[in-house]
View (cartoon, rainbow, N blue to C red):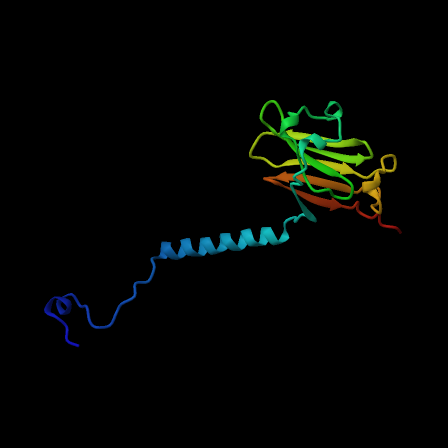
Length: 172
């Protein structure tokens, strides 16, 4: 293959030249790789839920807990039930200010025991902790040691459940 006059004058031959990225380009590439590795490590080491509950689709007319005993003021028309976890029933709702709420109940026969509730502005995850204590041992506490904390976290349209047992005391 012969070179034309313009290509020969500019030093362009038949071989292709590959441009190396600039020094700053390499710095940006290395930074991006480092950031990806850091996020991956945090995800691997970070807490993962023991279980994720989905909406149950039960009609609101089947609500079995009295809203008057709820620790949060919610609009009953916005209540959404989730799957049960160990005898505990999470409910999401909206309060009069438009905040997202999570209420945890323990259905028992014709009524329910409300274990906790919390509301938080939109955009944040709502968290409710339920503890297992000697004086409060519902059916949900079966087989769990005293001091265990069950954390319910409303994230989007799902409720993540984390079960954390107390640290065992070291015996001499």
